[in-house]
Length: 177
Image (tube, rainbow, N blue to C red):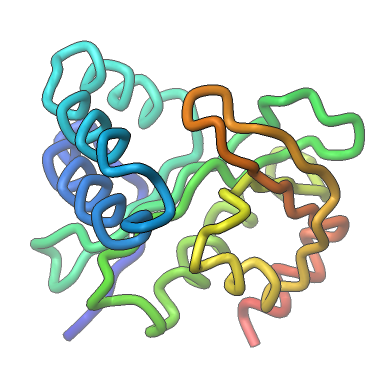
């Protein structure tokens, strides 16, 4: 099986939505109330949400991981830091990988691509917001991130923490080794 990481295209929308929905079902079960998970799944089927996702593909750094050039199995989004946090210019906005493909280096590959693009944009610091009770938080710890902030998610009313990375060049080297 060959995994390819490449820039996302608008034509990837269906596969991206499938990954997004499936990862919400598996990663957030027991973390987020089922009504929010079901609400998210319903929202992904609306034309408005799909248009927003298409815009995200065009306006942000957006990579997909693809199995054998046919099936999208993960994706990552990055770009300018959105919360105007004073110490960070870039943000890893999200990373989603189907459960059966996790722990195979795909998350590191996707993260590495986002970091390379942030570096090309002249950035050296990055932030990622993650649910405090996210069972996959250890991924950000293993990359050397430090919790630098905490707040409540506006919709879910759950605590989220921000992991900060202060040297993207160093992190990029670590991901490649």
